[in-house]
Length: 118
Image 1 (cartoon, rainbow, N blue to C red):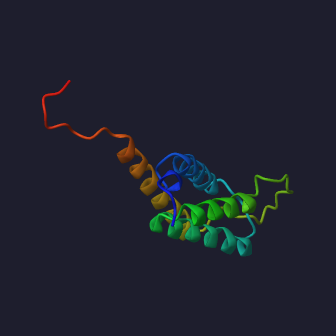
Image 2 (spheres, rainbow, N blue to C red; image 1 turned 90 degrees about the vertical axis):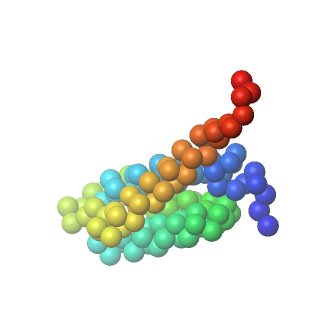
């Protein structure tokens, strides 16, 4: 059972979600050989599943996995045959970034008060 301090959207979870969003935003700039896109796509799906389940440990693992797959981690020779993310992956990443951002906004909004207290 996970503690609330580690759940996505609070404390450590908020920092983890920020890192996940940064990585997901970076995916759009990646250029990889066509055959290499299956691994980042699987990592994005694992990240989405962990986020959907509210599993902070699995989310941290998925973020770490995506970080390792980043072509920006190491200087590599750019091949003109490298391509940007395939359209389905770009769409999935965009949707996931917006979902995470919306939850972060909702979590930071103050609840409405129905009483007259200052």
